[in-house]
Length: 336
Image (tube, rainbow, N blue to C red; front, top):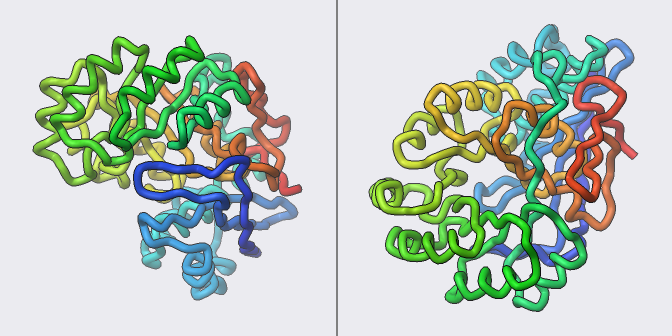
């Protein structure tokens, strides 16, 4: 196998703000794995919350590049286990795992969703994310991109008032993501008010380790609650099942498609709603997420839609939320 790594700085259409940070650019690592004339592509973004940079991921990968390139590639699952044993971070593993899955599908000449035996005739519609900003700017973003489902980022002193104002401008479904900014008391108080404003569920309202608070929320919230920062890796799924109604799986955080597939299976066995979310990736990462669509209840895969300019071709999301799957195999990714 041959490995290539490259850093991209992705410019965003608008400043993107959540409860703990704001940014205008997203640094991202693109990995290529080539074998037998085919190349698979994977992606992982930098993330200050988890202290991950593109440079740190590149250092991890290049440190064992010779071992990776001499690895006898058969399946993504075996390759993933090899990477875990080498002690790479989940972010670096994700980029390599996504590339391995894309490569595997291209070598088999089948899309991943076909290899997994799933049917893409029905799938959930992605939400479109509205970051924290002035109400005027948030409304402008909705008008710029009319969409059937919005994820609203909150974590201010006037969260319910913001949603009440946004509701005046659209009939779309709202999903609320407080990114750990609320207390249990705030969540329980806000939930009925938000439900009346057409909110479907709350995502990660409390700090990731506030399990006692989440137990209160589970017993008293009138809205379902989905885990995000509390559900990072496979071992988190079981604990989340006792404190949340569903889980939001991020490929970069869990280490790629290989563990995500196992997390989906475990979550479904526990009766949890299953969501997969993105990290403002390009179409490389979004196309990998799209392969999972038939297995999901909810999806947040608008990352490439938030960019000024994309770096790849693959899955296309139309203005009505319809997903156009690529004609090529694997994740269907080619770099521009």
